[in-house]
Length: 361
Image (tube, rainbow, N blue to C red; front, side, top):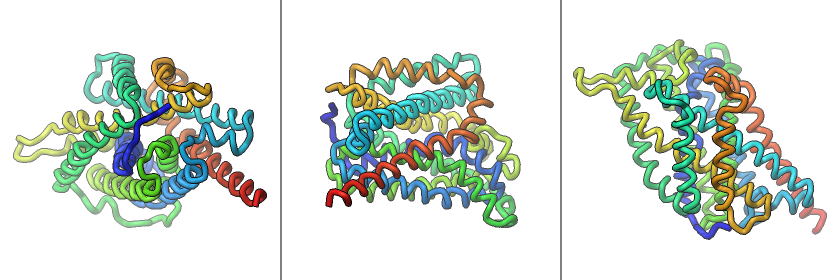
């Protein structure tokens, strides 16, 4: 079904923007709502979910090499129950890909192209991603390897240029109300950390499967450090108003002004951010396509790329009529839904697999 192979470095380069691309834009606001000045602690607490998710995915992949969760769930639970579990994953990944694409479209329209229909933005992104996915996982890996350094350099430059605008008093006192505010903020973050389970769709195509665990763990650590730095930087500039901003990082980017000449960098940041979002949507899209093909027992996933793409565009607008509704869903429902599908169910599958192995022995 997939003949391409990726390296452990490409795996990390694909998963890192899959988590970070949307997280750096919206999570500072979501986390500040609960944690306030302790928002930088929340990524540290919730990273434990990321480490556990990678460990669970790796252990499942190790027990069932060259298979994804759609395939080995049928071995663990039987054909019919396994198919139902596969459908649950499919019904999670396709709408979630639509949600991510819609969030991307709303951000571009709200920030830079207010007169452009959202369908044009979302449809063009899905079109480009579809061409990449038809080229295979190896092509997506090479694109991520090319784009991620540009994405990281721009993000680092943005944060460095913000230093003159920092007001460090904004992040003090630390833990004024104890641990609970930052832990509440961590609950929102867990939805993004469980997205590390997507490596289950990539590990079967890793050239050196033994490096999969190390690569995944290092990526979780890199995501945690990035979110800590972004959260501190955002709150140091915006303070208590962070909670009321839809895209706090884009707001702080507008503060950059050096000698009244080097300014208006938010357009450059958005252009580079789109590269990271392209990788994120491509990975979710690829997982949706691969899951569909494996559920239907197809020998090739490419015939379902376009039908799944059309479904994703439809899900961009079903049940999510506005940016307010999207933000509400991402704070209230998505973290728990993602936690159930990408953490609890895989953990359940791993435990059943271990018990089955013990009974056989």
